[in-house]
Amino acid sequence: GQTLSIDSVNQLAKAGTGVGTIAGGTAKTTTMADLGAVAAGATKDVKLNVLQTDGTMKEVSLQFTGEDTIDSVIGKLKNEAGMNAFYDEKSGQIALSSKATGKGESVTTQIPDEFGGPGRVSQVDASVTLADNASEDFFSSLGFNNGKALVTGGQNASITINGATIERTAEDGFVVAI
Image (cartoon, rainbow, N blue to C red; front, side, top):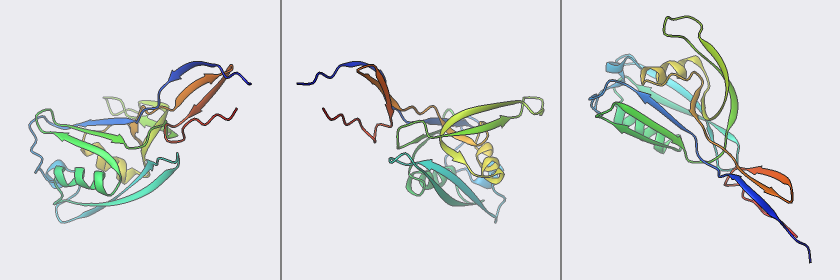
């Protein structure tokens, strides 16, 4: 018979995460108008590209109003965008993660420095990206400051079999025929 040697498991697949921070103690009933994310009586269209379990990115469009609360935004991100989302009132942190594992798509981000200058440009892998400036502005009002890359840090699984390194998202799985 044939021998198969699994030399190493290099890394496990994991989902990407992102954290935005607003003032600690901000109630989950605080409106988007109060946070400056959407004007009172107005609507803002937000477009996200979200990593799916098959490894593709899916565009998701959401609408937020000035009357939406932090709690309702969290609900829309979970129910309409298919993400994991949580808000901690005490710390003011909004924690997001993709439901799918894997590194997502590569995007270039430019984050202004603390003096309002052009800041740094970087290339990152993102599980959830923002499609336009209006979407970036909305999430910036919620304390996210990574440009187009909303959820980052996801990684593919990687194993070495008979000297060959193979990389997959966890959902792709590893099927080896002998």
